[in-house]
Length: 75
Image (tube, rainbow, N blue to C red; front, side, top):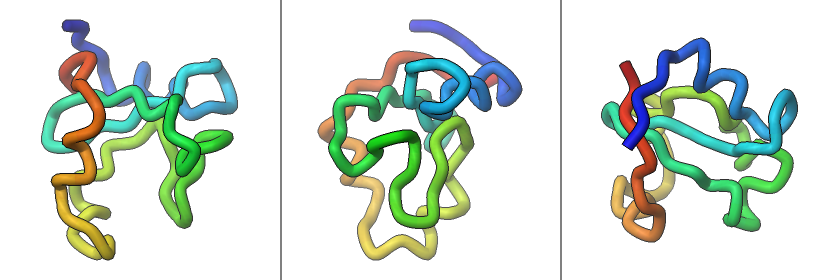
């Protein structure tokens, strides 16, 4: 698995590069195949960010990430 910084993650927002990645609890997930993350946005959330704190207010829990394999770690 890869290790990337927050700055590198920010480039994987579906706008600057074709990758649509997010971080949660230190792991990086590629959500590009999800129709819910089309163009790097999911409701008020943007890809290329660490969404750990934002998930506290989401209508779902962390099990939402079970359908995605982590591809790396946030450093």
